[in-house]
Image 1 (cartoon, one colour):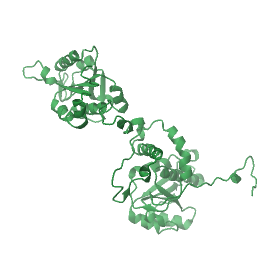
Image 2 (spheres, one colour; image 1 turned 90 degrees about the horizontal axis):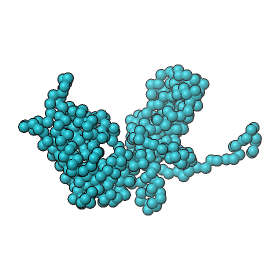
Image 3 (cartoon, rainbow, N blue to C red; image 1 turned 180 degrees about the horizontal axis):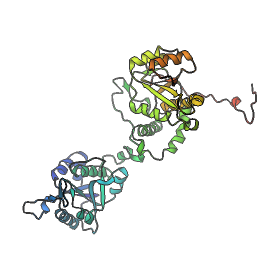
Image 4 (cartoon, rainbow, N blue to C red; image 1 turned 90 degrees about the vertical axis):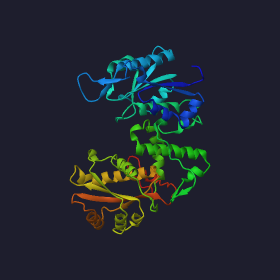
Length: 412
């Protein structure tokens, strides 16, 4: 390798200033000064055989836009190849047609000693030079950029921070987003209270086992809410936490004056719609209330619903009697959905309580009128949701006397 460098980048570009400006700051600048990484920039225009240094031309067959010629790119590549003295160096072409770049791909590339990055521009690059020199085509996302320079900067930054010695603490990247297919947990600093929002007590407890458990749980929940598409190997987490979610779920009626996010509401409703239903009829409907005046109005509508006046949101679970099997099983189906909401609320550390509406005709009528429900939509109950402002220890309702085998036996 020489000079102690762990990785060398060679960037082929028509706009070298973009790359120069990017690498001249912060972590990358320090890494190049310490000779951990080496970034070499080559202006494709310098290799043009045209007297005016022209590098593009019209496309055969017509069409909008100009095409970068094969010759200056290939000659630039040969110059780099001779410096590397490697028969088949890795050449990454940044293009929307490439494989989507992610953390796993970054780790793979971080094991290379040299990487050549080819930045496209204009409409495209002559296909022949792509076939001749490119080993990998990479896209940083499903959108179009003016050129490949920004994408090249993304790769350089993402790969470099995985190289030993680039970050001040070599373990810091191991805790970041996308490691182990989880987003990074929430981070806090002083002051402990900011605009009524307090740092979670566990983070100032000094108990590192509890802190690590909280962080893993928070990472999982944030991933489940924000990026469920990247969540993998989640079954082990579910198996280890489902009983805990059941045993620690309590009816919470006191809330802090904080909003409930749309992401949190959507996660609760995803849980609800994952509930079992008779013959998979799924004859439920959900009405979300977040308006403060409406919540206060609902709190006065029926008995035992005072907590709604302080709630961050409410979900009314209803059954559609016009749907398949609704008349026979709508209450069972909606009850299962309700239980899923309550459990999921507990998992993401929201407080929730179920307010019974059905089968009380007067309560059902008042709520139906308030929500303008059609005749076929029947409310089962209201779930009040908020940021907990009370703590209730886990309950233990297990009673062996309520268990019967083969036939009912009166154990009392």
